[in-house]
Image 1 (cartoon, rainbow, N blue to C red):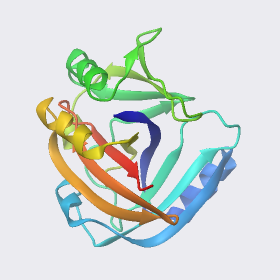
Image 2: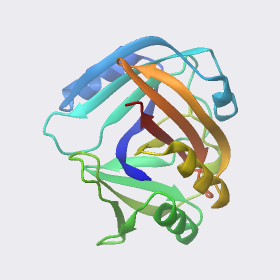
Image 3: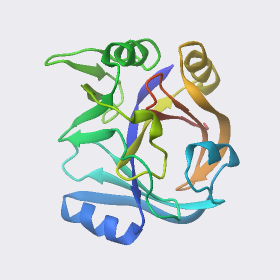
Image 4: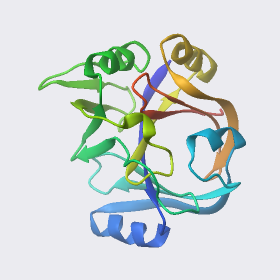
Length: 208
């Protein structure tokens, strides 16, 4: 079951420059790691795959807002700009079929209708709740993990195999089946996919 929202991924070609920009905007860096293994399954989600990538993780100092994971994939940013954007603590997603996307995010990702045309994922864990608004747009399916901008939304799950199966039977595609990953001293299970509209998403299951 999806138990909360973790972060939105932002592509960079200069991890330290992105760090300085986010620090100036009131974020704090929780970790920054180089040459982390990049699972080979993810090659289909990248314009240019390499075996390692660099990651930094930033949280708003004020305690409200959206956590940002900055990733350097080791290549120039290419392709269509990521479909996600931020408006304070609101996540925005461009999609060419708003109703289909809302249905998927409700049934698979547990988002419920909110006010002002938003949807909300409510978590019992502080900081894991998030609101999203869907905006009519195009070219979402051309976005890759190493495209410019905000490219991928990540969620916590307590059963990654069950949730990725829900994705498969609900119209999700470009599936990356669960794999092991260690970052910031934490052992994780990771899976990735595209929503029916083409938005990239990630599941994270911490190993307990």
